[in-house]
Image (cartoon, rainbow, N blue to C red):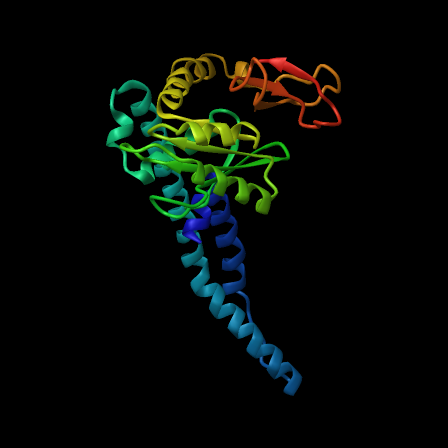
Length: 264
């Protein structure tokens, strides 16, 4: 329960702790009448079991929810610190562990407007590490914290298979190193974006220098604009083809039914 609660914003755990305590406290304080017959005896046993659970649960469950909230706060601060370190300190990526690198990549996508699910992946050298979404579009992300070697085509090919299996519309391979030419050629026609070390650092630094100060100075500036065609709140997307490939733009969440766009 602590782990599940830690995946949500900290205030959700606090609300759950308060509500759980109030409900279980009422159950723990309920009076149970003596049974009048055999059927009543069976019902009384059930009530005693519920009351016993409530007596202990009124303290145990709120503590678990509050612990999850604390973990959420700590994780939030750690991701912010990793993002700041990567944006301001030379050689920061090389000094990170693979777990820290995954946290940094997740924070990078959060600041691009994605919701991020950290799946844990396959450890330091394999598996899908993040599942991210914008509107109804889901993407899979694989992180490669490789300092000494290039990411080859086999990694990109494996991610393409995962995309098909999970019904994702696209994927990202993010590395602290570089990619081979074979990997880049394969990714071009597969809706997979390859993000190498220099590109990741450049975008993280741009986020740190522009997005965070702008949001702090003017929270309204971070609000999504309305679609020029259907007036729906727009979502951030990334151009994958053409002259603007790799750049962000505002797109309609109803795509392909509505194709309204705005420049960021």
